[in-house]
Length: 300
Image (cartoon, rainbow, N blue to C red; front, side, top):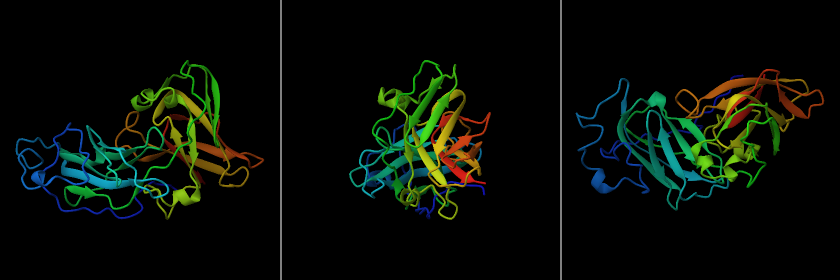
């Protein structure tokens, strides 16, 4: 079965008010578009001098609300809408945000990211096709809590076997490790391997999981979007109680830096099998991953 991450509930596409931030303005901390920006369009998508790329659509803003796994609003969470360039917003006390875009964007290149660092799991989701130029996301965007600490990934190109929670990361000698800039800023925490095993209850809340076709197991990783110069193996505890010797497909959430756009698409990156004793899931020989975001396991 092919597994896909999708928004599990509807997206409300509200009628467009005509003004928003200029590209590069860095978004807005406000939970609504200011009235003085909602009435006229002097510099935005409708400006005839604003160049429209091939296939581009006018996108004024992206709004929504971010919550914890306990459905509590998360304040001051950074939100980005990234593709060819990035636009930003930040949640306020009730968890709501508006990322002001006001530009023509090629939607197939863009994804929204909920930035969970340092404490929570980040994730991407591609933008849907629009029916107007204001996108209001009606489902809660859940950013779950990661383990507080974990073992450090050495950045010295050494061979390593690192165990965190239900996952083991195996790096061959001479593997260069490239951290995302957000994790570099969080050092030493930014290099610590922190793995969240997604429970069935949390799986049902994640807005990017298709409730009709959920994975058998799902794991979130920090450092988020760490890149390896050669394939790294990941072994998992068999938390889903898959049968011994069963074949498993492993899917990875596509990142922004190391992959083709849009981020958030899920690619099959490796094959694996359940061990003979049924206790773990091991990637097949020669298989591996070159980045860590979210890994989903699906029994063939």
